[in-house]
Length: 146
Image 1 (tube, one colour):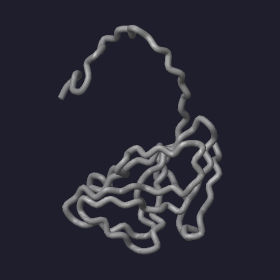
Image 2 (cartoon, one colour):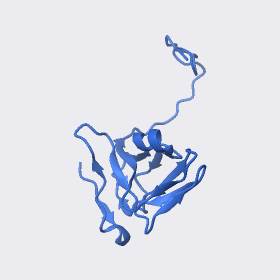
Image 3 (cartoon, rainbow, N blue to C red):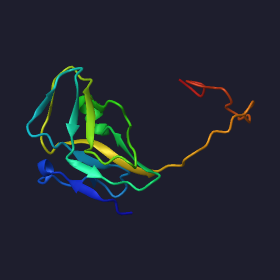
Image 4 (cartoon, rainbow, N blue to C red):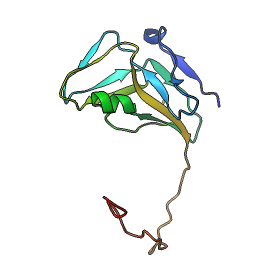
C-alpha cells in the first residue's frame, strides 16, 4: 500500500518514518524539533514530526510508545495509542510524557514513537435487550488471572 506523505520544510533533513526490522508493525517517527527539548519529570509536550499524511478512507494511524524508550527512559506516548483519522491532513505531533525521575532530552532526529497503519470497520449499533453468552461472559479486569 502506498500512502502520500508530505515532508514539511522544517523536517526536510530527517528520514521518513521507517520500519526498523522486517517484522515490525510500526514505523519509527522522528522528532522535528528545531532544538533540544528537555522533558522534566512528570512533564508532557507535543513534539513535531514534520510530516503530514493522507490516509485512505477506513484506515487509521495509531501513534504508540517505543518500548525501549518507555522501559529504559520512562518516556511514553501519553494518549497511547493516539489515533489519526483518515480525514486529518495536519502535521503529526506526538504527546510525550516523562514518567521517570530524571529529565529526558529530546534531540532533533530522535526516534520518539511508532506509527502503525491499519484498516478498521465502520459499524452501526443495533440495540438489543440481551447479548449472546460466552465462556468469559461478564468476567472483567483480572478475571483470567492477576
